[in-house]
Length: 308
Image (cartoon, rainbow, N blue to C red; front, side, top):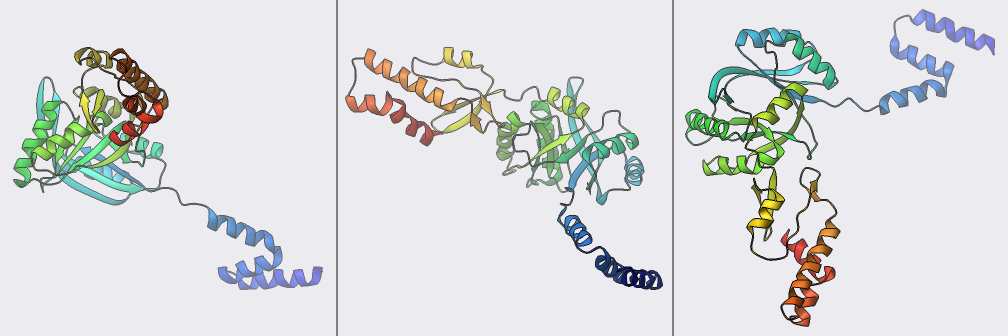
């Protein structure tokens, strides 16, 4: 047994730097252990690629930042015009948007960008796949009036306090940063100006910037009213809404998953059906068919599902 092993070792030594043959010889020496290691390495998933965006105050600052991002790929720089609310009025100034891709952990990216950035609180955002995210980036396609029309809409959005900032690119497209509850109102404003549908992307970012974003979106609706299958943002609390409506059967509910689900939905179905049944009984009972259709959870549930 020792003699063939010694011969293989000598052959390996003579082959020197021929890595493919060396790998084959090692596999003959170690057998399944090497093959198993190779299979494990090949099966390891690649780290996710992050698309990261930040802005700098000037071309020179953007160049210095890019020089510090040795780990970044697909780096692009673009001159933009930013609109935001500051000291009681809309402010605007030119900036340079820097975008890049990386497979580095986001925490490492944050440290590297913050260390090289010229702003005390820079915007450092990365796209995510979390549809229940609290923070969103929206892109409005160029308007017919080009960059001038885009600037007017960006100023309007910043003044509305629905967005923390609106950035206009040379082609007139607008990138906005806002919170989840403001998306519907922003989309309506864009549609009114001929901007069409907003392309939304959930984002994560540095904690200081996200706090600022939330603080700036003071007009973002905190509540939603759903009626006849249509949902609309509202500044009214649940109590204010109920007191402002005529008599009827209502239910108020909390949502989860970024507004995609109703918490304890079945409880709300049963409670609303019970209220409708009581109202029908108090009004003289009503037809048996109406009681069955609206006064029971089994009958009422399909109507709610169809309307929602």
